[in-house]
Amino acid sequence: MSNLPKDWKEVLIENVFDNVGGTSLEKFVNENGKYKFISIGNYSKFGRYIDNNQRIDINEKSANKILNKNDLVMVLNDKTSTGDIIGSSILIEENNKYIYNQRSERLICKDNIYPKFAWQLLNSKYFRKKIVSLSQGGTQIYINFPIIKKINFFLPPLEEQKKIADILSTVDKKIAFVEENINATEELKKGLMQKLLTEGIGHTEFKDSELGRIPESWEVVELKEIVKDLIGGVSVNSEDRLKNNEEYGILKTSAISNGKFFPQFHKTILDSEISRAIINPKKDHILFSRMNTPDLVGESGYVDNNYFELFLPDRLWQINVKDRNKTNVKWLSFMLISNEIKKKIKNAATGTSNSMKNISKPNLLKIIVPFPPLEEQKQIAEILSTVDNKLENLKEKKQSFEELKKGLMQKLLTGEVRV
Image 1 (cartoon, rainbow, N blue to C red):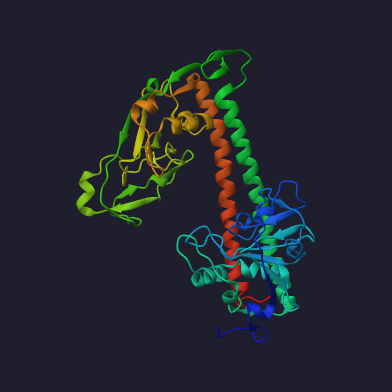
Image 2: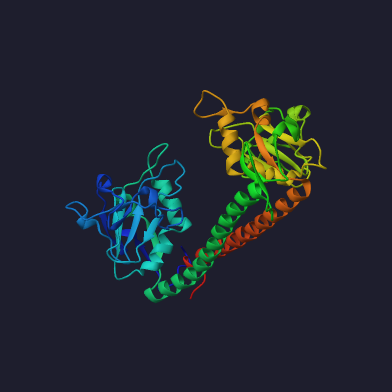
């Protein structure tokens, strides 16, 4: 870096950390152990510890793998070829609480690096990209620590490291606070969906039905009684890129997920194929994935606008309801993503392949659902939509903080801005 500040030094990882490799300890894991166990499943993409309740006790092999406060532990493997977690590093904040497994490396900070600065640095975009570029393997990549030891970076003076870490930690706290709100709101939505879609609003009289206890004024209907038709698209030749303003797109199956529609997930239709594309996503309709992987078949998404420049592929249906004076489309969208209905849809899907399942129109349309009066459907949809809007606002706020941190890291970790 030509404009490196005078008091910054170019160093290697081995100049700032001592390191100790992990040992295979999986066979000693037990639910009643005293220590938290750190293995590949405990690393988040962003260097946070994910507690999956794996615990371990002290024995002759694990005794020297106890981590101390301000140690870092880095994962050297990945379950993917793209490097989602490889190089992710967790900062240990308590003594005598964690033990680490094989393919994790313990990093002990030397006197010239501040642990919280080291955590920010190791999880920075520069480091993670560097580790991925140096990794080996195919579908599951890995890296050996002697290679990481030779990665170079620019190290500011210790006092500046502390200031940089404090600034970035402040933004991290904002992100963590928003994440807590997102998690709480998602739990609220889950509980509201369970209650509103089965018990309704303010009912005191209930009856037994094929679906269990429901309000007295509700019916139980098959989907064919409220769905007019399921219209599918066609398969067309396309380029896997976003279209420009003059082009037309064909949706990917990933364009719908958990009741949401994401029009940005599409491919560009070849000019010679445009005449074959027939079905556009229409406002106040539901798109439904009739063919997908076993865990995604039956996904659906509510369309809140008209998209005349986009078309449906043959693996997506557009759901039209029979009578909008009896059925609120937004309510139906929430019903289709409720836990019970999603289970029924997946059970109704068929296919011999472990990688792909399909649901037929007859099998989908004979699924039974609880059916409130129209006005109550609208009230239920409005309540759940309000929670959805809050979730969207929180996710946008989180993204803005993440963008802020990305910009700060670029400037602070390169010395472009001094503190």
